[in-house]
Length: 204
Image (cartoon, rainbow, N blue to C red; front, side, top):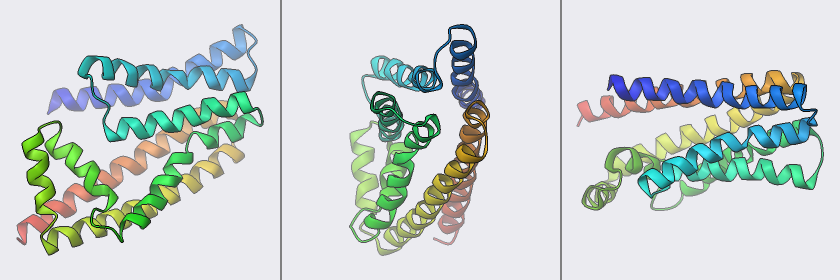
């Protein structure tokens, strides 16, 4: 547990400060424009995900979302435009996730179910099947619908806050504040989800 916590904290620190350092160095010492400095610093999470992929030969659902979001930001650089708009484009998939949460409320598998299965069952095919089978129970399905609704609201709020941060602060400051706000929302919701799941489990 302590080892995983240390790794999580290290990942957060690296994902906040490494892109900022790359952006600052390229812009200040190599004369990169804001657009291309942002593009270069956004490559760090891509390389991090690629390293994890070659190590485990798998790409989990969460990593895929991060990768798609980052690639959309890189694509924005080639299209051209405002650097602040590129920062917002990187969170475009956060908005899509929020919308997807609401859409999947009307399907047999609310979106957060997939995240939960990844977290609980990992790559174990038997555990994944057992976890999926539990969704047939009415109370379990209702639980995932409520959790998905809550996450959908938070995803959209986080996206709106990202827009506010990007357009009210400098690019360099946004590179620090925006990821921290994202981690704050994510860990707050994870804590609430785990607390609520334990509470429901106690009640049977």
